[in-house]
Length: 212
Image 1 (cartoon, rainbow, N blue to C red):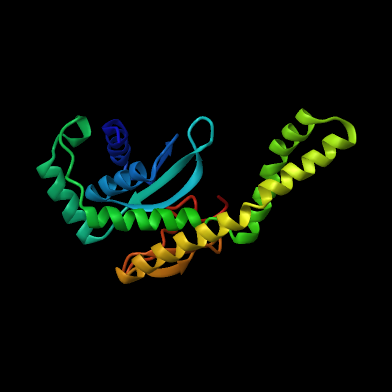
Image 2 (image 1 turned 180 degrees about the vertical axis):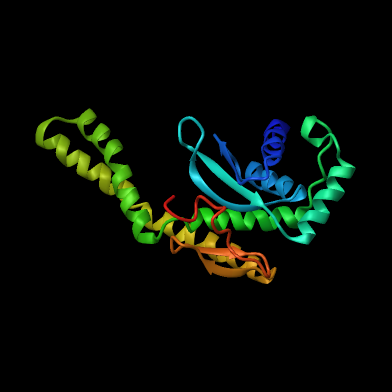
């Protein structure tokens, strides 16, 4: 991950307000590392959604201030140990266990964004443009219509596979989080989330919670 994203995030965190990071071509590695660095300086991962970057194909990562005493102590310790982190200095070393838990939370949130029914509807709508290109690129008139229908059906045949993979990821990471003491909670959108022990989902400070 390029450190410039971490530096930019740390500068935004100086406001003390919730921070949204719009990332194009964001990998899970980049998302989890940014969330980890945020935790080291007084913030907490809150949510993630698709739609980041100029083309809308990336992710938007939301981090919010962490008011707990533990977070405050950790932030003070890291500011003292890494005083130039925001200006290009050394960043705190990654903690593999903490990074793995953040990966589990972020991955679960991404896979739980839509229900299976919503995913089927999105896939059905998304398959139409390519089916039209294939159908009318290879035929005309009634033949083009038949080819379009066939291309659409062929794409939809892969949807059950995608749903199965998505369920497996959700089950895997839900088990990992529960083993670490995280508890399930339902956000205002009706989406299942996992929160750290003794914590609650972000409320008004989370712009993704309602009407996102």
